Image (cartoon, rainbow over all chains, first blue to last red):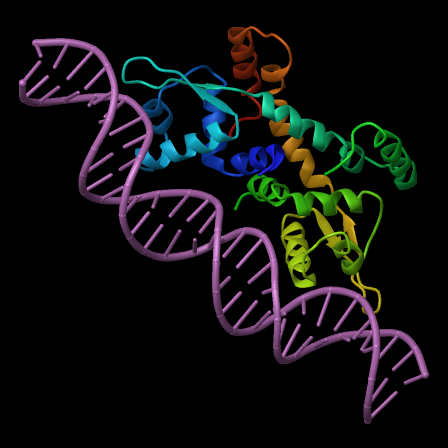
Length: 112
Length: 112
DNA sequence: CCTGTAATAAACCAGAAAGTTAATTATCTT
DNA sequence: AAGATAATTAACTTTCTGGTTTATTACAGG
């Protein structure tokens, strides 16, 4: 799966977004991350694996703990993608102008 | 499913993102949208239903055609969510400062 | 060395997703 | 009324997802 798709699908789950939000406050162990959820530890462990495979978290090692930390870089790709459509939700816009702008931009960054 | 999750999961598919990109250039019928893909028409029809349920497209009616048009408003919610993490991918940052900023912001817009 | 704690792995299950082909509906055209 | 075109619906298959419980691995400390 491409990077953008795997980042988006990793984020398309409220539990995983909550984990990201928690990690924005700093490192945390698996048990700490799991505490707020009404869900087994292995379930949280699986969510972490999804986030890890998407490159959104990294895991260290400290004795029997695996502290997780946020790796936000993949979010940039989403921000970039969505930025192309900003004009479509921001107030009024002239569709033809928008289209022409888009075509011009496409000289450099295309696709998707 | 919550709005943010359904928008993110709708976008977590390259076919659907390509459809969005196409619609940014203006309305299109189902057959027009399906043309670039090596996939049956019903498959595309299903993708459109996913996008519609996420509020990302709207469908009109013109004789036997159902022209689709982009509705980008749900993207705003993603942009807002992701904006909270901008500091984490933009160059260097001081984590404690970031955290404190975040806490302050949370007085107003919380969750997720 | 045994026990407790942190975490992952394995095996399993139910339901959702993404595709297929064949059938159906709706509309225009002649 | 018949036929062609646009699109959806139905029925089905396969694979993925998100959860469970039980078992296993890895480490710390008495």
